[in-house]
Amino acid sequence: MTAELISVGTELLLGNIVNTNAAFLARECAKLGLSVYYQTTVGDNPKRLKEALCQALKRSDVVILSGGLGPTRDDLTKEITAEALGLGLSEDAHTRERIQAYFDARGTEEIPENNWKQAMVPEGALVIDNDNGTAPGLILEKDGKTAVLLPGPPNELVPMFRKDIYPWLHKKQPETIVSEMVKLCGIGESRAELLIADLIERQGNPTIATYAKTGEVHLRVTARAKDEEAAELLIKPVLEELRARFGDQIYTTDERVSLEEAVVDLLREQELTVTTVESCTGGLLAGRLVNVPGVSEVLKQGFVTYSNKAKRKLVGVKKATLRESGAVSEKTAREMARGAVLATGADAAVAVTGIAGPDGGTEEKPVGLVYIAAAVRGQTYVQECHFTGDRVKIRESSVAAALTLLRKGILETAEN
Image (cartoon, rainbow, N blue to C red; front, side, top):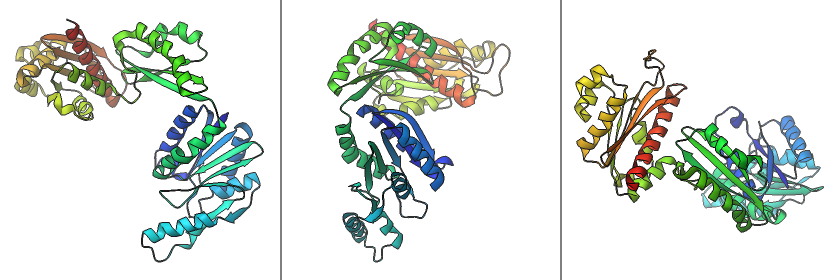
């Protein structure tokens, strides 16, 4: 079965709010085995909404609309859908009672008249109770097509979909789609794709897709089967083959785990503490680590040594090194990492120094040149990087590379 998503709301078109509903619904449809080929965002305009809906009903089996079910005059999703399907509206007594109870529970003496508009439903609709608001969800079926109407607020839409809509759609669609994410670091997208070109060329079910992230590559393996267990059996040999080809470059196969979480877990596993010392990233690396709950077990301290004076005073970089090699150099990065270990007594340290731009670059040391060093258990690893993009992108790329080098150092010293 095919499904299509229509998000309703002028505020979405203007960028006033981020459309998290579409991302959530797309993921849920994938789990259900529904193929989503189109997503549309349309403003609170009756003509354009009807055009989008009619087009969607022609090409898709299920159309899921979110938003436009509120009490105001521009909330017209229900009315336009009923019109497109040739259905009249009538008051649903059960929904009216729930609206009354909703306001009674909040001590409202007089219910705004326009709220009763939400008790009007299309003929033959399956009404879905809203446990978190006043607008009910609706399921409409006609001529082999299905329209599912959901309230716009995510705190209403998400629980309603999970509790009622997902089970209903699951009965309609016996197949399911399961995906597993393989996350890589320390390798570029082109190289990663080259290593699995033969798998991609002969893929059928499961399929493999590559996604480039800042400093990472993600491989999504997706299988379609009668149930989740059967799909996982199809995916298993593909995951084993990817592990054989990429080895330690795979930092997780859990979609919910980030690179910084994987590094913190590795530090815990190896019973190591770490210190960060940053120049061009200015605390961004420490911030990524601090995003991980429980990082206090492993993170000793974070230094921002933006000036040469700070590099000398806080982590002991030599004056001669700064004078002869410069702040952005392999030698300075090495001394920053080693000095941070000595200054804090940590088991490991990771250092970043570079030119984030847009100014400050020279022919010899251009914008985007970054040196990263990781000192782990007495061993020091240094990497020279050349990043492209604006200042933000270069700093983010530097952080991802620093986490990757720290992870590499931990793994290599653990083996020795």
